[in-house]
Image (cartoon, rainbow, N blue to C red; front, side, top):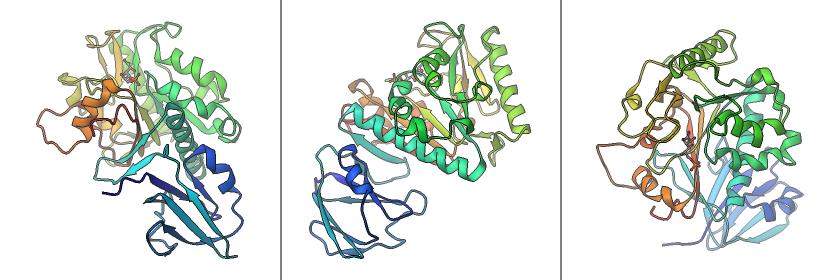
Length: 340
Ligand SMILES: O=C(O)[C@H](O)[C@@H](O)[C@H](O)[C@H](O)COP(=O)(O)O
């Protein structure tokens, strides 16, 4: 079996070429001519065509140690692929899977992915609706609040939500809002009126009702669209996963996992503290246009193996119920992916 790392070619509109490795992207961005073909180490040159370039992301992936690109002028470039390159596995219905060597690379790739989607949705609809989580996610977004993205992203068009929130005051150390504010929102010029935090003066039950009402109002005002199934459709959800396979505040074996009418619901006995939380339901999560699942660390390897491995099981983990109308993209580190 070919064990070479995957090379990702991102063919952007002007046919400049970038690779998903920060160390070589700079030189490739200045690529001077139109590319006409690409060749992996042991195969003939393949003309660049629509078949090679997926319409949406314009990504081609090749498993190879060296790749040469031939341009119209014609100039030939050869690049050795760095051992630390992300691997892109095939899509078997569970989404695009990427495994990174380091935390740094997860952050670099997640920032680019998020910035690209922001650009796409702002161009298409004039807004970008993004759903955040708690946990390490905010830390993974750290490259997005650095140049070039901090200056290039159209932050004024962002609308920010939470997939789940602990029912605590907004200045409490357990608050997902506080986590996001300290690490992300305070560093970018998103209009405060576009940041939809829960009403922390209410009980869990009422806070869930209130948040659902807020979403319904935004649908009415056309900030949010509805999916074909009648649930709000967000442009991007950025999710983490716990070692037990939970996503949002939807925990294994809890009846909320099956909730299929409410948009936002509440839990008062969360197995993970704090006990009182509100959470989006699966029909809302699965109405998303894009879901990024960012999972790192050896403690998550077992749940990931169950979620992404070949085995069949009747008792599905919550993470296995993530199945959006749009695309799922996994950002994993080596430790989390060690059992795949
Ligand atoms: O409310 C919570 O308890 C957390 O937000 C939790 O749901 C978290 O998102 C996952 O456990 C992933 O955590 P890590 O990203 O830190 O692994």
